[in-house]
Length: 462
Image (cartoon, rainbow, N blue to C red; front, side, top):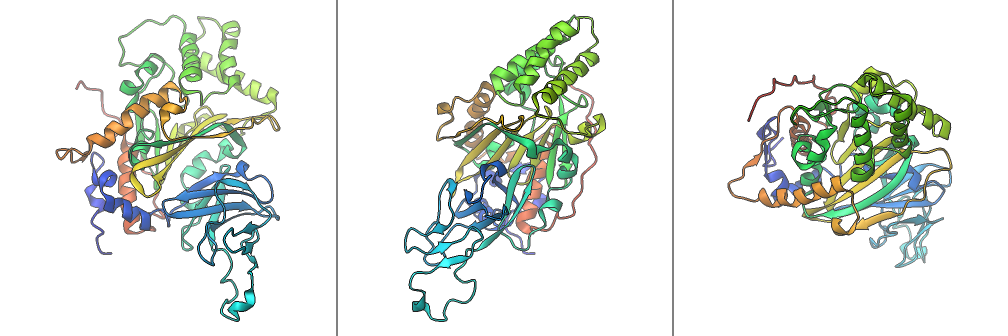
């Protein structure tokens, strides 16, 4: 295949070129070779619960309408009238039929044309299907509706592997939004996403977390996707970071109390109220002498009991081995990231260009929780042009302060490209190589499997 000018061989585990973020030609290549050919999340299934419910998903110049038909099937179509190209719908809503506001052509939720005004004018010019909406590949997994504009794309189930197998048991489809925010960020979509696909920045950007987080992390390639976790093992990395001066902690529960309070106040996600209340139960049902492992186990037990008692339920079959393999943070190629260690509370991101502007992006954030049936809150989708208007929690504000500076700093003529950690930021360099390979051939990595975990080197100074 002839080179497109951005060979994947330029990417190493410790280097990726800055052109991926700054070069308008790279954006234009993504516009033609990535977004029309890759699986991407369009909406959450619970946004379209009833017949006729629809959501519009826009990606650069393409607009896709996802709709639930009267038969309960979820379908997706290019969002234009085949007569003159007029947009049929915007945003989200409910429609028994899609009616073009320009000349009144009508379409069913199955995409079939129902009405052409004065159809006799066309005689036999309109062959069967010519006046129908153009369908888009659609699939569901994890409670999400995924779309792909390429009729020759890899099936969604295969595309999501091995992430799908390693996360299937978490029952993401049973989660619902506790809040949902979107914000325009003054940076390329990959610049913004990069801040959420590694934990290496925690020690500086979110240094307040070090008092309760053993923050050294590891990552690796998982097919097209990326896997990130903490080096300490399964579950939450609760404990004082070794980066801080040693300090005797007589009561391990204090780590959990601080963790729960900071996540409640500084992130407002990845923790249900049940989980916070469970830490308070530790005060009366364990003691300062309870070993750390037993404290964490008790906390997990209390969260499970509260979930069952509330009617929210709990996933079955989650063994310690499965939790370890599922990691902490996933990057699903190309533009989805989610963090799921809390099991019943998951933080989910989506990143995409802001229209046709490669210098800005739209970042969507869902805080998902497991609620008892009927107890799901009614959530308004909040959309902001500036993060400062959005009442984002502290951890988000800390990231938002850095991201535009990264975008601006990369423009320096002396900056050649990123130098990611081959251990802690391996998922990031893997993304760049995978992206460039996809732009060369969207099927190049259809059968790519997980790479072995890369051993972390011994700590060193500097």
